[in-house]
Length: 271
Image (cartoon, rainbow, N blue to C red; front, side, top):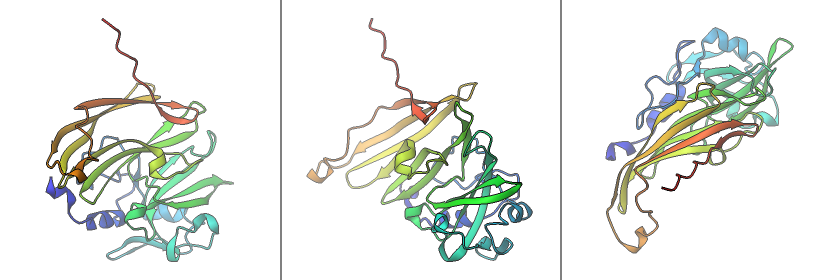
């Protein structure tokens, strides 16, 4: 377990690399867990980046040695306050109908100068208006590096995303949503989380696995497995730690007009 909690310099490096256009963005960056989604976020090539970002970047996207793709951004107002020093590092892109069922939108994954609290990145939202890609906003901590699109009943699309992180002795695997009409912090959009840790009080290993879409892609389920839990100490300060969770819990979520919502399991029939 201890190997899970080494330095997170790899996260910074991963946030700055670029891949050829058309290739998945996250083929081998995962370190703690195995991804469960078939990510539709793909690498953003330089020519495509310059075309999509023409109204956002003041300079062409150039690859800076040791940093990766970089551009200097235009001054665009309060919706872009999270762009630090007018510097942006584009990384990947998803196209979809994020603001309305008839809209053509693009979510560009990238970073400015985010640290660990902002999950080392953010997302630039653009919408095609009059044949031109128009910047809408940039939000730090909204990370779309590994996501699948989900159509709501009105055919507007949101994203189902996953991300791994670690710190303070924990390794986390998050499954969460991104709704571009109502972007929110991870704590408000979280659907499921695996938490593996080892400390003075206890150790635990959890996994997210068995992800499965229903054929109409309006409902999916995922399994949260607790494969290990050991209470190491009974000191009073360790009382906050819960008892071992169920070995396996299957969670089901459905697309509703309000987004992805948990489907409560039906009670077992009495014998």
